[in-house]
Image (cartoon, rainbow, N blue to C red; front, top):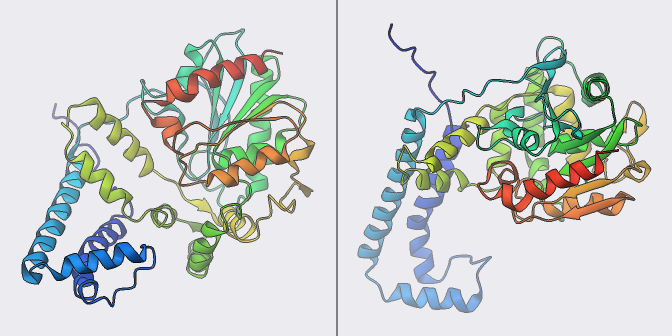
Length: 407
């Protein structure tokens, strides 16, 4: 029997945007060369002395030779970027990890039970609504959930799935009170004891309204956004610039599609995809590094849409009005006030996070009465996918969960 053809990869998504940003960035050197030589270029971010020195150096070069060299270098970078994309799309790796048994399900939301030690502290892992849950169970070698099981704990993973017919009109209340709260109760009943709630990214923000419940032994917040103005409002201003178009998109489609979300993240570092795929092009395809790259990119490109109500709440209430940090975010008609949470809390703030500014997550430490703060030298996604994260974070984190979930 002939082997079944693998579905074609679509990433990096949105591909036209990544290609356009790379081409604009690299080819702009050619456009900037004449004004850089004559001193009319606006050096907003450069030291004046350095700009003057560069202008003098440029004036001593052959302009035609320099233009040819710049053009050749731009072409080389474009070729390498395209080679990386082609290599990624053709790579044979496919994620084939089997899901553990389903403990509980409502609509597209389910809880996966990893069958850890019966005596181990139970921990419910809650991912963001934006990306698939399997970032916490990426590969056999890089699975936070399976690592916790190996360390003697009893992990459960909340998988939101993609919004289906029942979820198309869900807001944050529906997800938190209608899905997360009963899922937590199902885990507590299965484990027979209070549960450590561990939320990653947006999942961390979503567990906070349940943090004061009796069935919660402790909270672990992993790169959790809270104060959306703590970075000086930089991200809020970026999103505000796109808000009219995004609002129209939500009104027309009833949801915010994955490519729109990916485009917002890409704007935080316009040449990130070009750098990543150019580096990937230099890796031996059969290497572990290449497989790990493909596994992570497959997850990134497997994003799900946000329902219209959730998208509006995140864009307008969180980023726009900074409602969580100002005590005006309501869930079930009640304000979410971290000061009411009395259980132990670990706030993990990755020092190299470019998606959730560290200051945004760190603001929770001041708002929580019993918070311990860690600042590992990791990025937002690296916290779950870096080859260094077991040594830098997971080992200590498993010990913290065991100590605070053993009651």
